[in-house]
Length: 177
Image (tube, rainbow, N blue to C red):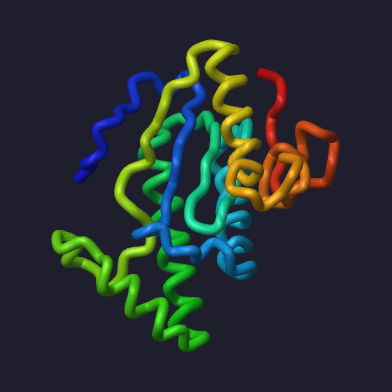
């Protein structure tokens, strides 16, 4: 059941989405976890025709501007798949402290699982103008700067700011919008 008050109205447009770890736990700060997320995004680009215009992966959340036939369905599958992979990694590597937190913070109505990794919802914002695209891309790229992690957006390895500055990046992005 989708409890998000934000809605997808037209999949012909790109959408700004936010995906957050439950209780803002800094799990995405672990390289192995980021690798799972990056590999999953690459899969969506190759196999589900997801167009990625901008992204940033922070320690506890990520933002993307994407365009795909069914944003809600694709992100739901992404969250489900990555949660399974990440939780399996924590089990295999005996990270009991993290697993306890993921179990403790699991929402009560999630009866079909022992753990919850991602918060519900993606807060989609339809990008229906060049000005809105510029604003969202700039917001995404400046996220690590605002947090004080880097002085320049392109210095953050897990960001499309590198693509937009012609630097090597973790993911391919489409910059013609």
